[in-house]
Length: 534
Figure 1: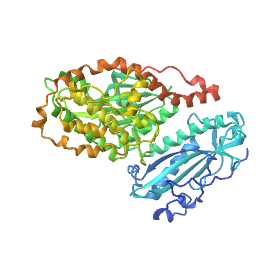
Figure 2 (figure 1 turned 135 degrees about the horizontal axis):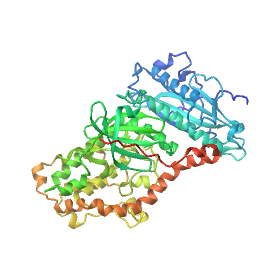
Figure 3 (figure 1 turned 90 degrees about the horizontal axis):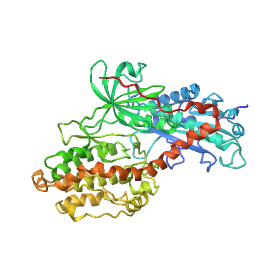
Figure 4 (figure 1 turned 90 degrees about the vertical axis):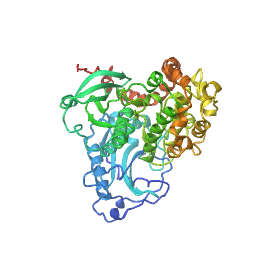
Protein backbone atom coordinates (compact mmCIF):
# COMPACT_ATOMS: atom_id res chain seq x y z
CA UNK A 1 0.00 0.00 0.00
CA UNK A 2 1.44 3.32 -1.00
CA UNK A 3 1.72 5.86 1.75
CA UNK A 4 -0.48 8.95 1.47
CA UNK A 5 1.22 12.30 1.27
CA UNK A 6 1.87 14.22 4.47
CA UNK A 7 -1.34 15.88 5.61
CA UNK A 8 -1.96 19.59 5.88
CA UNK A 9 -1.50 21.04 9.36
CA UNK A 10 -4.08 20.95 12.13
CA UNK A 11 -6.71 23.67 12.08
CA UNK A 12 -5.86 26.57 14.40
CA UNK A 13 -7.31 26.72 17.89
CA UNK A 14 -10.24 28.90 18.75
CA UNK A 15 -12.21 30.89 16.19
CA UNK A 16 -9.26 32.65 14.58
CA UNK A 17 -7.94 31.11 11.37
CA UNK A 18 -4.39 32.23 12.16
CA UNK A 19 -2.15 30.06 14.28
CA UNK A 20 -0.68 32.16 17.07
CA UNK A 21 3.09 31.77 17.31
CA UNK A 22 4.75 32.72 20.57
CA UNK A 23 8.15 34.42 20.32
CA UNK A 24 10.07 31.30 21.39
CA UNK A 25 8.29 29.07 18.87
CA UNK A 26 8.97 31.53 16.06
CA UNK A 27 12.71 31.00 16.51
CA UNK A 28 12.61 27.23 16.20
CA UNK A 29 13.96 25.67 13.00
CA UNK A 30 14.33 22.02 14.03
CA UNK A 31 11.01 20.72 12.75
CA UNK A 32 9.22 20.55 16.08
CA UNK A 33 7.43 23.87 16.09
CA UNK A 34 4.08 24.64 14.44
CA UNK A 35 5.85 27.46 12.57
CA UNK A 36 6.78 24.83 9.97
CA UNK A 37 3.17 23.84 9.41
CA UNK A 38 1.20 25.57 6.70
CA UNK A 39 -2.02 27.34 7.59
CA UNK A 40 -5.19 25.67 6.38
CA UNK A 41 -8.82 26.61 6.38
CA UNK A 42 -11.56 24.37 7.73
CA UNK A 43 -12.33 21.50 5.37
CA UNK A 44 -16.07 21.89 6.00
CA UNK A 45 -16.70 18.46 7.44
CA UNK A 46 -14.48 16.40 5.15
CA UNK A 47 -12.79 14.97 8.24
CA UNK A 48 -14.11 13.52 11.51
CA UNK A 49 -11.93 15.07 14.22
CA UNK A 50 -11.47 14.93 17.97
CA UNK A 51 -9.06 17.06 19.94
CA UNK A 52 -7.54 17.04 23.40
CA UNK A 53 -6.15 20.23 24.87
CA UNK A 54 -3.52 20.78 27.53
CA UNK A 55 -1.59 23.92 28.44
CA UNK A 56 1.66 25.18 29.91
CA UNK A 57 -0.18 25.66 33.22
CA UNK A 58 -0.94 21.93 33.36
CA UNK A 59 2.57 20.92 32.34
CA UNK A 60 4.26 22.67 35.27
CA UNK A 61 5.58 19.34 36.59
CA UNK A 62 7.68 18.63 33.49
CA UNK A 63 11.30 18.82 34.52
CA UNK A 64 13.11 21.54 32.68
CA UNK A 65 10.02 22.43 30.65
CA UNK A 66 7.90 24.67 32.85
CA UNK A 67 7.48 28.03 31.15
CA UNK A 68 9.60 26.98 28.16
CA UNK A 69 7.10 26.73 25.31
CA UNK A 70 9.51 25.03 22.93
CA UNK A 71 10.47 22.38 25.50
CA UNK A 72 6.83 21.79 26.42
CA UNK A 73 5.88 21.33 22.80
CA UNK A 74 8.79 18.99 22.27
CA UNK A 75 7.73 16.88 25.27
CA UNK A 76 4.24 16.51 23.80
CA UNK A 77 5.55 15.68 20.33
CA UNK A 78 8.01 13.07 21.61
CA UNK A 79 5.34 11.41 23.75
CA UNK A 80 2.89 11.20 20.83
CA UNK A 81 5.63 9.88 18.56
CA UNK A 82 6.45 7.10 21.04
CA UNK A 83 2.77 6.28 21.43
CA UNK A 84 2.26 5.93 17.68
CA UNK A 85 5.44 3.91 17.18
CA UNK A 86 4.82 1.54 20.09
CA UNK A 87 1.13 1.20 19.30
CA UNK A 88 0.56 -1.18 22.20
CA UNK A 89 -3.16 -0.48 22.58
CA UNK A 90 -6.14 -2.50 21.29
CA UNK A 91 -5.83 -0.62 17.99
CA UNK A 92 -2.48 -2.28 17.29
CA UNK A 93 -3.82 -4.38 14.42
CA UNK A 94 -5.61 -1.50 12.72
CA UNK A 95 -3.24 1.37 12.15
CA UNK A 96 0.41 1.94 11.42
CA UNK A 97 2.74 4.87 10.96
CA UNK A 98 3.04 5.17 7.20
CA UNK A 99 5.70 7.84 6.82
CA UNK A 100 8.40 9.68 8.72
CA UNK A 101 6.67 12.48 10.64
CA UNK A 102 7.54 16.04 9.77
CA UNK A 103 7.35 18.54 12.59
CA UNK A 104 4.09 18.05 14.46
CA UNK A 105 2.24 15.92 11.88
CA UNK A 106 1.75 12.18 11.61
CA UNK A 107 -0.11 10.05 9.08
CA UNK A 108 -1.50 6.66 10.10
CA UNK A 109 -2.59 4.15 7.49
CA UNK A 110 -5.45 1.73 8.14
CA UNK A 111 -4.69 -1.97 7.90
CA UNK A 112 -6.48 -3.98 5.18
CA UNK A 113 -7.43 -6.48 7.92
CA UNK A 114 -10.27 -4.28 9.16
CA UNK A 115 -12.23 -5.03 5.98
CA UNK A 116 -14.89 -3.26 3.90
CA UNK A 117 -12.28 -1.33 1.98
CA UNK A 118 -11.63 1.16 4.79
CA UNK A 119 -7.88 1.15 4.15
CA UNK A 120 -8.46 2.30 0.57
CA UNK A 121 -10.80 5.11 1.58
CA UNK A 122 -9.36 6.65 4.75
CA UNK A 123 -6.26 7.49 6.72
CA UNK A 124 -5.82 8.97 10.18
CA UNK A 125 -3.80 12.09 10.82
CA UNK A 126 -2.55 13.50 14.10
CA UNK A 127 -1.49 17.13 14.43
CA UNK A 128 -0.14 19.15 17.33
CA UNK A 129 -0.63 22.92 17.41
CA UNK A 130 0.29 25.66 19.89
CA UNK A 131 -1.42 28.92 20.57
CA UNK A 132 -1.73 31.54 23.28
CA UNK A 133 -5.42 32.16 23.91
CA UNK A 134 -6.72 35.72 24.29
CA UNK A 135 -6.50 36.89 27.88
CA UNK A 136 -4.51 33.83 29.01
CA UNK A 137 -1.00 33.86 30.41
CA UNK A 138 -0.24 30.31 29.34
CA UNK A 139 0.21 28.62 25.97
CA UNK A 140 -2.45 26.12 24.92
CA UNK A 141 -1.51 22.95 23.07
CA UNK A 142 -4.10 21.02 21.12
CA UNK A 143 -3.60 17.57 19.64
CA UNK A 144 -6.16 16.89 16.92
CA UNK A 145 -6.81 13.37 15.61
CA UNK A 146 -8.78 13.20 12.36
CA UNK A 147 -10.26 10.49 10.15
CA UNK A 148 -9.62 11.85 6.67
CA UNK A 149 -10.95 10.62 3.30
CA UNK A 150 -8.27 9.99 0.71
CA UNK A 151 -10.49 11.66 -1.86
CA UNK A 152 -10.20 15.42 -1.41
CA UNK A 153 -13.37 17.42 -0.92
CA UNK A 154 -15.49 14.40 0.01
CA UNK A 155 -17.30 14.19 3.34
CA UNK A 156 -15.92 11.46 5.61
CA UNK A 157 -19.42 9.95 5.91
CA UNK A 158 -20.10 10.01 2.19
CA UNK A 159 -21.86 6.83 0.97
CA UNK A 160 -19.41 6.63 -1.94
CA UNK A 161 -16.60 5.83 0.52
CA UNK A 162 -16.30 2.25 1.72
CA UNK A 163 -15.68 1.08 5.26
CA UNK A 164 -16.60 4.18 7.28
CA UNK A 165 -17.89 2.15 10.23
CA UNK A 166 -14.74 0.02 10.44
CA UNK A 167 -12.48 3.04 9.92
CA UNK A 168 -14.37 4.93 12.64
CA UNK A 169 -13.79 2.10 15.14
CA UNK A 170 -10.02 2.20 14.51
CA UNK A 171 -10.12 6.00 14.70
CA UNK A 172 -11.97 5.99 18.04
CA UNK A 173 -9.40 3.71 19.63
CA UNK A 174 -6.54 5.77 18.22
CA UNK A 175 -8.09 8.93 19.64
CA UNK A 176 -8.15 7.38 23.11
CA UNK A 177 -4.52 6.26 22.82
CA UNK A 178 -3.40 9.77 21.86
CA UNK A 179 -5.60 11.33 24.54
CA UNK A 180 -4.10 9.14 27.28
CA UNK A 181 -0.63 10.01 26.06
CA UNK A 182 -1.26 13.75 26.28
CA UNK A 183 -2.95 13.49 29.70
CA UNK A 184 -0.10 11.39 31.08
CA UNK A 185 2.27 14.29 30.39
CA UNK A 186 0.25 16.29 32.94
CA UNK A 187 0.88 13.71 35.69
CA UNK A 188 3.17 14.72 38.55
CA UNK A 189 5.94 12.46 39.78
CA UNK A 190 4.04 10.11 42.07
CA UNK A 191 5.70 9.10 45.38
CA UNK A 192 5.86 5.38 44.57
CA UNK A 193 3.44 4.75 41.72
CA UNK A 194 4.36 4.54 38.02
CA UNK A 195 7.99 3.77 38.88
CA UNK A 196 8.08 0.07 38.09
CA UNK A 197 7.26 -1.30 41.56
CA UNK A 198 4.12 -3.46 41.65
CA UNK A 199 1.26 -2.08 43.72
CA UNK A 200 1.20 -5.22 45.88
CA UNK A 201 4.75 -4.60 47.02
CA UNK A 202 3.81 -1.17 48.35
CA UNK A 203 0.24 -1.53 49.62
CA UNK A 204 -1.97 -4.19 51.17
CA UNK A 205 -5.68 -4.33 50.36
CA UNK A 206 -7.93 -4.87 53.37
CA UNK A 207 -11.71 -4.72 53.67
CA UNK A 208 -13.97 -3.64 50.82
CA UNK A 209 -15.74 -0.37 51.50
CA UNK A 210 -17.99 -0.24 48.43
CA UNK A 211 -18.18 -1.74 44.95
CA UNK A 212 -19.43 -0.64 41.54
CA UNK A 213 -19.52 -2.08 38.03
CA UNK A 214 -15.81 -1.63 37.35
CA UNK A 215 -14.35 -0.16 40.52
CA UNK A 216 -14.05 -1.29 44.12
CA UNK A 217 -12.98 0.97 46.97
CA UNK A 218 -11.04 -0.82 49.68
CA UNK A 219 -9.40 0.14 52.92
CA UNK A 220 -5.68 -0.33 52.48
CA UNK A 221 -2.40 -0.21 54.40
CA UNK A 222 0.98 1.08 53.31
CA UNK A 223 3.24 -1.89 54.06
CA UNK A 224 6.29 0.01 55.27
CA UNK A 225 4.61 2.79 57.28
CA UNK A 226 1.34 1.15 58.33
CA UNK A 227 -0.63 4.22 57.16
CA UNK A 228 -4.32 3.52 56.50
CA UNK A 229 -5.66 4.72 53.15
CA UNK A 230 -8.61 4.27 50.79
CA UNK A 231 -7.77 2.61 47.49
CA UNK A 232 -9.95 2.83 44.40
CA UNK A 233 -9.28 -0.28 42.34
CA UNK A 234 -10.45 -0.02 38.71
CA UNK A 235 -10.47 -3.38 36.96
CA UNK A 236 -9.51 -2.92 33.31
CA UNK A 237 -10.55 -6.27 31.86
CA UNK A 238 -14.07 -5.30 30.87
CA UNK A 239 -13.67 -1.54 31.13
CA UNK A 240 -14.94 0.21 27.96
CA UNK A 241 -12.07 2.05 26.24
CA UNK A 242 -13.55 5.56 26.78
CA UNK A 243 -13.87 4.86 30.51
CA UNK A 244 -10.34 3.47 30.61
CA UNK A 245 -9.05 6.71 29.12
CA UNK A 246 -11.22 8.73 31.51
CA UNK A 247 -9.29 7.30 34.47
CA UNK A 248 -6.27 9.28 33.29
CA UNK A 249 -8.35 12.46 33.31
CA UNK A 250 -9.53 11.73 36.85
CA UNK A 251 -5.96 11.13 38.02
CA UNK A 252 -4.60 14.26 36.32
CA UNK A 253 -7.35 16.41 37.82
CA UNK A 254 -7.03 14.95 41.32
CA UNK A 255 -3.25 15.28 41.24
CA UNK A 256 -3.59 18.99 40.46
CA UNK A 257 -5.88 19.72 43.43
CA UNK A 258 -4.63 20.72 46.86
CA UNK A 259 -7.35 21.99 49.17
CA UNK A 260 -8.25 21.22 52.80
CA UNK A 261 -11.82 20.30 51.83
CA UNK A 262 -11.01 18.01 48.88
CA UNK A 263 -10.00 14.37 49.35
CA UNK A 264 -6.40 14.24 48.04
CA UNK A 265 -4.84 11.71 45.71
CA UNK A 266 -1.83 10.19 47.48
CA UNK A 267 -0.48 7.89 44.77
CA UNK A 268 -1.38 6.17 41.51
CA UNK A 269 -0.38 2.79 40.06
CA UNK A 270 -0.98 2.00 36.38
CA UNK A 271 -0.88 -1.78 35.91
CA UNK A 272 -1.96 -4.07 33.11
CA UNK A 273 -5.04 -5.48 34.84
CA UNK A 274 -5.96 -2.70 37.23
CA UNK A 275 -5.58 0.97 38.08
CA UNK A 276 -5.01 1.78 41.76
CA UNK A 277 -5.85 5.28 43.00
CA UNK A 278 -4.58 5.72 46.57
CA UNK A 279 -6.66 8.29 48.45
CA UNK A 280 -6.92 9.69 51.93
CA UNK A 281 -9.15 7.50 54.11
CA UNK A 282 -12.31 9.33 55.17
CA UNK A 283 -13.48 7.34 58.18
CA UNK A 284 -16.28 9.61 59.38
CA UNK A 285 -19.14 7.90 57.58
CA UNK A 286 -22.13 9.37 55.81
CA UNK A 287 -22.80 13.07 56.38
CA UNK A 288 -26.58 12.69 56.68
CA UNK A 289 -26.40 9.73 59.04
CA UNK A 290 -24.11 11.81 61.25
CA UNK A 291 -26.46 14.78 61.23
CA UNK A 292 -29.29 12.48 62.29
CA UNK A 293 -27.24 11.34 65.28
CA UNK A 294 -26.41 14.87 66.45
CA UNK A 295 -28.09 15.96 69.65
CA UNK A 296 -28.76 19.34 68.07
CA UNK A 297 -28.77 20.74 64.54
CA UNK A 298 -29.23 24.39 63.69
CA UNK A 299 -29.10 26.76 60.76
CA UNK A 300 -25.57 27.64 61.93
CA UNK A 301 -24.49 23.99 61.55
CA UNK A 302 -25.96 23.85 58.05
CA UNK A 303 -24.28 27.14 57.17
CA UNK A 304 -20.86 25.88 58.31
CA UNK A 305 -21.16 22.77 56.14
CA UNK A 306 -22.27 24.83 53.15
CA UNK A 307 -19.31 27.22 53.51
CA UNK A 308 -16.85 24.31 53.40
CA UNK A 309 -18.60 22.83 50.38
CA UNK A 310 -18.57 26.17 48.55
CA UNK A 311 -14.87 26.71 49.30
CA UNK A 312 -14.03 23.32 47.78
CA UNK A 313 -16.23 23.92 44.74
CA UNK A 314 -14.93 27.47 44.31
CA UNK A 315 -11.35 26.20 44.36
CA UNK A 316 -12.16 23.69 41.60
CA UNK A 317 -13.96 26.28 39.51
CA UNK A 318 -11.09 28.75 39.82
CA UNK A 319 -8.87 26.02 38.38
CA UNK A 320 -11.41 25.60 35.52
CA UNK A 321 -12.52 22.20 36.76
CA UNK A 322 -16.16 21.12 36.86
CA UNK A 323 -16.93 18.31 39.32
CA UNK A 324 -20.01 17.20 37.33
CA UNK A 325 -21.43 14.98 40.10
CA UNK A 326 -22.10 17.13 43.14
CA UNK A 327 -24.32 15.22 45.60
CA UNK A 328 -24.43 14.47 49.35
CA UNK A 329 -22.78 11.07 48.94
CA UNK A 330 -19.66 12.84 47.70
CA UNK A 331 -19.34 14.94 50.85
CA UNK A 332 -17.40 12.77 53.27
CA UNK A 333 -16.55 13.27 56.93
CA UNK A 334 -12.91 13.20 57.90
CA UNK A 335 -13.32 11.32 61.19
CA UNK A 336 -15.85 9.97 63.66
CA UNK A 337 -14.92 12.69 66.14
CA UNK A 338 -15.73 15.72 63.99
CA UNK A 339 -19.23 16.46 62.72
CA UNK A 340 -18.30 19.28 60.36
CA UNK A 341 -14.92 18.50 58.73
CA UNK A 342 -16.17 17.47 55.29
CA UNK A 343 -14.22 16.87 52.10
CA UNK A 344 -15.39 16.69 48.50
CA UNK A 345 -14.73 13.33 46.87
CA UNK A 346 -15.29 11.29 43.68
CA UNK A 347 -13.94 13.19 40.68
CA UNK A 348 -14.78 10.36 38.27
CA UNK A 349 -16.91 12.66 36.09
CA UNK A 350 -14.80 15.79 36.60
CA UNK A 351 -13.66 17.68 33.52
CA UNK A 352 -11.52 20.66 32.64
CA UNK A 353 -13.37 23.64 31.16
CA UNK A 354 -10.82 25.14 28.80
CA UNK A 355 -13.56 27.38 27.37
CA UNK A 356 -16.99 28.51 28.62
CA UNK A 357 -19.77 26.02 27.88
CA UNK A 358 -17.32 23.53 26.38
CA UNK A 359 -18.62 20.36 28.09
CA UNK A 360 -21.18 18.07 26.47
CA UNK A 361 -20.95 14.73 28.29
CA UNK A 362 -24.25 13.64 29.81
CA UNK A 363 -23.46 12.81 33.43
CA UNK A 364 -24.60 13.40 36.98
CA UNK A 365 -27.11 12.04 39.48
CA UNK A 366 -30.82 12.44 38.64
CA UNK A 367 -32.04 14.42 41.67
CA UNK A 368 -29.09 16.83 41.46
CA UNK A 369 -28.45 17.11 37.71
CA UNK A 370 -28.74 20.57 36.14
CA UNK A 371 -31.39 21.49 33.56
CA UNK A 372 -28.79 22.39 30.91
CA UNK A 373 -27.42 18.84 31.04
CA UNK A 374 -30.91 17.37 30.74
CA UNK A 375 -31.60 19.61 27.75
CA UNK A 376 -28.29 18.51 26.19
CA UNK A 377 -26.90 22.02 26.06
CA UNK A 378 -23.14 22.68 26.33
CA UNK A 379 -22.25 23.54 29.92
CA UNK A 380 -19.38 24.37 32.27
CA UNK A 381 -18.65 24.86 35.99
CA UNK A 382 -21.96 26.62 36.54
CA UNK A 383 -23.71 23.28 36.18
CA UNK A 384 -22.20 22.34 39.57
CA UNK A 385 -23.86 25.35 41.18
CA UNK A 386 -27.34 24.00 40.40
CA UNK A 387 -26.37 20.78 42.19
CA UNK A 388 -24.97 22.85 45.06
CA UNK A 389 -28.33 24.62 45.27
CA UNK A 390 -30.08 21.25 45.59
CA UNK A 391 -27.70 20.22 48.40
CA UNK A 392 -28.21 23.55 50.22
CA UNK A 393 -31.99 23.08 49.96
CA UNK A 394 -31.59 19.57 51.36
CA UNK A 395 -29.29 20.54 54.25
CA UNK A 396 -31.73 23.22 55.37
CA UNK A 397 -35.06 21.44 54.92
CA UNK A 398 -34.31 17.72 54.89
CA UNK A 399 -36.05 17.32 51.54
CA UNK A 400 -35.12 17.76 47.89
CA UNK A 401 -36.40 20.66 45.78
CA UNK A 402 -37.35 18.39 42.87
CA UNK A 403 -39.07 15.02 43.25
CA UNK A 404 -40.92 12.73 40.87
CA UNK A 405 -42.49 9.29 40.78
CA UNK A 406 -40.69 8.59 37.51
CA UNK A 407 -37.60 9.80 35.71
CA UNK A 408 -39.77 11.66 33.19
CA UNK A 409 -41.72 13.47 35.90
CA UNK A 410 -38.55 14.35 37.83
CA UNK A 411 -36.74 15.71 34.79
CA UNK A 412 -39.78 17.71 33.71
CA UNK A 413 -39.80 19.45 37.09
CA UNK A 414 -36.06 20.17 36.95
CA UNK A 415 -36.27 21.65 33.46
CA UNK A 416 -39.23 23.80 34.56
CA UNK A 417 -37.24 24.94 37.61
CA UNK A 418 -40.30 25.17 39.82
CA UNK A 419 -39.96 24.32 43.51
CA UNK A 420 -41.60 25.43 46.75
CA UNK A 421 -40.54 26.29 50.27
CA UNK A 422 -43.02 24.07 52.08
CA UNK A 423 -44.20 25.74 55.29
CA UNK A 424 -43.61 22.70 57.51
CA UNK A 425 -39.96 22.49 56.35
CA UNK A 426 -39.06 26.16 55.99
CA UNK A 427 -41.01 28.17 58.58
CA UNK A 428 -38.06 28.33 60.98
CA UNK A 429 -35.43 29.09 58.34
CA UNK A 430 -34.24 32.65 57.69
CA UNK A 431 -35.15 34.62 54.58
CA UNK A 432 -31.46 35.11 53.84
CA UNK A 433 -30.97 31.34 53.56
CA UNK A 434 -33.94 31.11 51.21
CA UNK A 435 -32.44 33.91 49.13
CA UNK A 436 -29.23 31.91 48.65
CA UNK A 437 -31.25 28.92 47.43
CA UNK A 438 -33.21 31.14 45.01
CA UNK A 439 -30.00 32.52 43.50
CA UNK A 440 -28.52 29.05 43.03
CA UNK A 441 -31.56 27.27 41.56
CA UNK A 442 -31.73 29.55 38.51
CA UNK A 443 -32.46 27.94 35.16
CA UNK A 444 -30.12 30.17 33.16
CA UNK A 445 -26.54 29.26 34.19
CA UNK A 446 -25.36 32.73 33.12
CA UNK A 447 -27.55 34.27 35.84
CA UNK A 448 -26.92 31.53 38.40
CA UNK A 449 -24.74 32.51 41.34
CA UNK A 450 -21.09 31.45 41.09
CA UNK A 451 -19.26 29.76 43.96
CA UNK A 452 -17.29 32.92 44.72
CA UNK A 453 -20.45 35.05 44.70
CA UNK A 454 -22.17 32.54 46.98
CA UNK A 455 -19.34 32.77 49.50
CA UNK A 456 -19.98 36.50 49.67
CA UNK A 457 -23.70 36.06 50.31
CA UNK A 458 -24.90 37.91 53.44
CA UNK A 459 -26.35 34.74 55.00
CA UNK A 460 -22.88 33.16 55.14
CA UNK A 461 -21.63 36.23 57.03
CA UNK A 462 -24.36 36.09 59.68
CA UNK A 463 -23.13 35.55 63.24
CA UNK A 464 -23.27 32.00 64.57
CA UNK A 465 -25.17 33.11 67.67
CA UNK A 466 -27.96 34.48 65.52
CA UNK A 467 -28.21 31.40 63.30
CA UNK A 468 -28.02 29.06 66.31
CA UNK A 469 -31.42 30.35 67.36
CA UNK A 470 -32.96 28.64 64.33
CA UNK A 471 -33.20 25.00 65.50
CA UNK A 472 -33.65 22.41 62.77
CA UNK A 473 -34.63 19.28 64.69
CA UNK A 474 -37.21 18.35 62.05
CA UNK A 475 -34.60 18.71 59.33
CA UNK A 476 -32.19 16.52 61.28
CA UNK A 477 -34.80 13.76 61.57
CA UNK A 478 -35.60 13.93 57.87
CA UNK A 479 -31.90 13.78 57.00
CA UNK A 480 -31.47 10.79 59.31
CA UNK A 481 -33.96 8.80 57.24
CA UNK A 482 -33.10 10.43 53.91
CA UNK A 483 -30.84 7.64 52.65
CA UNK A 484 -33.39 4.96 53.48
CA UNK A 485 -36.30 6.94 52.02
CA UNK A 486 -34.45 7.66 48.82
CA UNK A 487 -32.85 4.27 48.28
CA UNK A 488 -35.70 2.58 46.45
CA UNK A 489 -36.93 5.72 44.70
CA UNK A 490 -33.43 6.62 43.54
CA UNK A 491 -32.83 3.10 42.29
CA UNK A 492 -36.01 3.15 40.22
CA UNK A 493 -35.26 6.53 38.68
CA UNK A 494 -31.52 5.98 38.26
CA UNK A 495 -31.83 2.74 36.27
CA UNK A 496 -32.91 4.44 33.03
CA UNK A 497 -30.56 7.38 33.64
CA UNK A 498 -27.45 5.25 34.20
CA UNK A 499 -28.38 2.91 31.36
CA UNK A 500 -28.67 5.81 28.93
CA UNK A 501 -25.33 7.25 30.08
CA UNK A 502 -23.49 3.95 29.79
CA UNK A 503 -24.99 2.98 26.46
CA UNK A 504 -22.65 5.21 24.46
CA UNK A 505 -19.59 4.07 26.46
CA UNK A 506 -20.25 0.44 25.66
CA UNK A 507 -21.13 1.05 22.01
CA UNK A 508 -17.53 1.70 20.96
CA UNK A 509 -16.30 -1.51 22.58
CA UNK A 510 -19.21 -3.44 21.10
CA UNK A 511 -18.49 -2.16 17.59
CA UNK A 512 -14.82 -2.98 18.02
CA UNK A 513 -15.55 -6.58 18.94
CA UNK A 514 -18.07 -6.90 16.12
CA UNK A 515 -15.50 -5.76 13.58
CA UNK A 516 -12.81 -8.10 14.93
CA UNK A 517 -14.23 -11.27 16.53
CA UNK A 518 -10.72 -12.42 17.40
CA UNK A 519 -10.72 -9.83 20.17
CA UNK A 520 -14.06 -10.98 21.56
CA UNK A 521 -12.37 -13.60 23.71
CA UNK A 522 -10.59 -10.84 25.59
CA UNK A 523 -13.70 -9.93 27.57
CA UNK A 524 -14.88 -11.85 30.61
CA UNK A 525 -16.45 -11.27 34.00
CA UNK A 526 -14.69 -8.99 36.44
CA UNK A 527 -11.85 -10.65 38.27
CA UNK A 528 -12.05 -10.72 42.05
CA UNK A 529 -9.63 -8.56 43.99
CA UNK A 530 -7.43 -10.35 46.50
CA UNK A 531 -8.19 -8.95 49.94
CA UNK A 532 -5.64 -9.45 52.69
CA UNK A 533 -6.32 -9.41 56.41
CA UNK A 534 -5.06 -6.47 58.38
